[in-house]
View 1 (cartoon, rainbow, N blue to C red):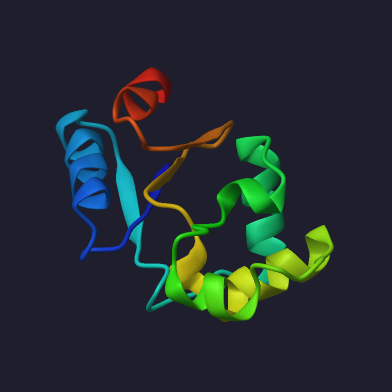
View 2 (spheres, helix red, strand yellow; view 1 turned 180 degrees about the vertical axis):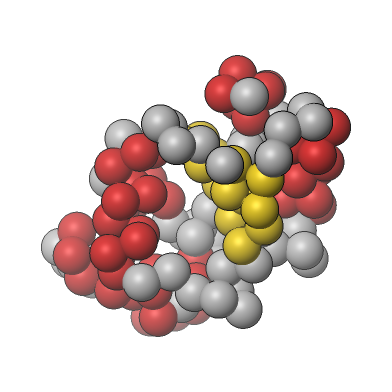
Length: 113
């Protein structure tokens, strides 16, 4: 099953979801702002992405700039920050049973479908 970690207010996230819908494959949507990921879930997703936590953070978000930008945080602390502030997580993320990608550009989604 494909999971789309989705923010309906984001144009790129809507575009990524549309690509998954058009693939004809079975999928589910997880609106991660309404249903935040746990630290364990986020850790597993980072493993599938082959990312360090910092690579998944939207550093242009106001909350990042105001509260975390100049702090020296460990990977574990960064995961905790994203769990508490899911708005900081890059989007969309498309996950298959074997891998995951950030859907920017959309061709990355097409590559795993």
